[in-house]
Length: 177
Image 1: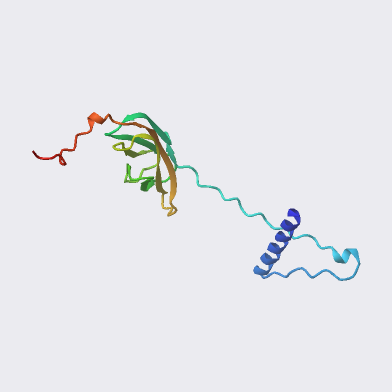
Image 2: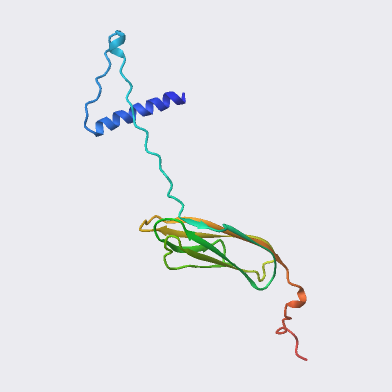
């Protein structure tokens, strides 16, 4: 059934292509029962050209980083480096973190072919005990191409809860004697 539908689709596409090009269409088959009059050579349709994805021109040394075990309180930072392996400059348009607890920074100027750039992720561990996995989506352009491409980087780890004694006591609510 699939083959019949596919064949029918190809014939319709072929007929439409012929009409669009202003060429004569085949004459309809004769209604006589003569075998030679009822068979027509099948129309051939060129297969559409395969769409090739753009060559990879931004290569990260590591697409993910695990901090392991972290103490609650200070920010944890990691710098991802990338190399332009293409033939045109790469411009990082923006980097978007999956949540407000992660602050990205990145190389703002174009990265020439063969050169390197960086994406830095700073994760705020304060008040966030437990396991975490966060992503950074890098939006970039290659050369004069206006199509924005993306790459996703990941940070993960586990934040160990700070001991209660390390948290300052709130004295603003104490009674005055």
